[in-house]
Image (cartoon, rainbow over all chains, first blue to last red; front, side, top):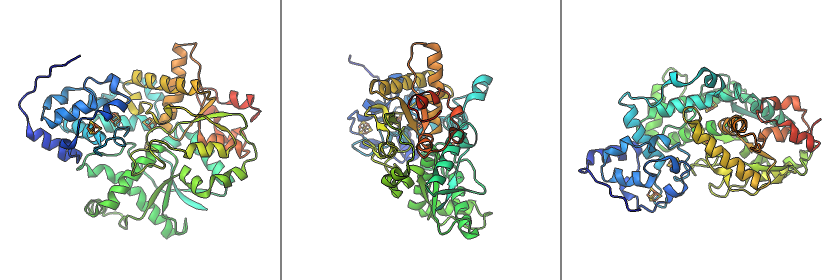
Length: 134
Length: 299
Ligand code: SF4
Ligand code: SF4
Ligand code: SF4
Ligand code: SF4
C-alpha cells in the first residue's frame, strides 16, 4: 500500500553528524533495498533499514524516535551485501550513540529479574550494556 | 605447538564446557593453549563509530600481553593470539584491523597506555581455533580420529561473528565451508540448510527475549526440516540462545522437537576418543548425551 510520508525541513547538520560518526557516505545509498530484504530483525522494525538510510539522507531527525536502531544487532548481514559497500551497522551505532551520549540509557539494569540475571551469560550482559547504555 | 590463548569471560563461567573440550581436544593433536597471564574482557561487541577510540583500548591491551609472553619465553616467536569465542574473535580482530590501518589511532592508544612497559607494535594476528585446524589440514585431523561420528547428522551454525564483516571473516561470508569440512573430518554427516549464518538475536536475549525465541525457533525448525540431529557452534552467546532459550521454548510448547546444541570442540573431543567427563556435556541444557548414546559414541 502507498504510504505518504510528510517530510520536515532538511536538517543538514543531522546528516553531517551521522555521516561523520558512522564514517559512512550515507548519500551514496541507491535505495536498492537489499539491506532491508535480508535483515533478520526487519519484521520487528517500524522503519526498515533502507528507509532509515533515506530519511537520514534527507536530514529527518525523526528517525531518532524509531525502534530500528535499537533492534539492529550489528549482525553485519547487510554490511556484506550492500552493492554500495555501505555499512548500516555503523549508521545504527551512530544513531544509538547520539541518544546515549545525551545520557539517556535504553536499558535499566533494575528491570532484569534476579532469575534472569543468574541465568544470563556474561557475554550477553556485557554486549547488551555496551549497546544500550552510554 | 604452543600458542597464546585468550579465553574471554564467558568461557570461564557459563561456557566452561567449551573451554574444557577445546583444551583437551587440542592437546590430543599436539596444540597447547598458553593462556595469557593477564587478560581483560574485550567488550564483547566492537565499537563501530569513527570517534569512539576509547573502546578499542580493552582489546588492544590484550595484544601487549602476547608481546610480553614472547619476551618471557612462554611462547616462541608466536605472534598469533588464539580465540575460541566467536565474539571475542570478532571484537579483537576488528580493533586490531583498525590499529593496523590507522597509525594515528594506534599512536593515541599507545599514548593512553603509557604505563605499560611497551607499545603495541601492530604485529599480532588474531586467529580462531577453526582457522588453526584448517591450516593444519582437516585431512590430518581426520587421521587422528579414533571414534568416527558415523551417521551423526550435524548442522553447522556459523552465526554472524565468524563470517562478518568480510575483513575479519574466517571464511566466505555467503557460502562458508570451514565448519562442514570440520564435520566431515570427524566422519559425521553434514546438513545442507539455510539458517547456518542467520543471526540468533544476540544480546537482545537480555531485554527482548521474544525476538530471540522467534529467531531460535526458525533456526531449529530449519535444522529439523533438513534432518539435523545436532547443531554445532563456536559462540557462547549463540549457544545460550540456541540451547537455553530453546529449552524454554520447549517448556512452553511441549510438542516442540528440540535439537541438542554442541560446541564444535565437544564433538571433536568425542571423535578423538576423550571420555565424556572431559567435555562438560552436563553443562549443555538440552540433553546432549542422548543422541551420542543412540549412536553408540558414549556409554
Ligand atoms: S543495501 Fe546499501 S545501497 Fe541498498 S538500500 Fe541498503 S544501504 Fe542503500
Ligand atoms: S546489521 Fe543491523 S540492519 Fe543490518 S542486517 Fe543486521 S540487524 Fe539488520
Ligand atoms: S566477548 Fe565475551 S567472552 Fe569474549 S571477553 Fe568479552 S565477554 Fe568475555
Ligand atoms: S548468531 Fe547471535 S550470538 Fe552468535 S555470533 Fe551472531 S549475533 Fe552473535
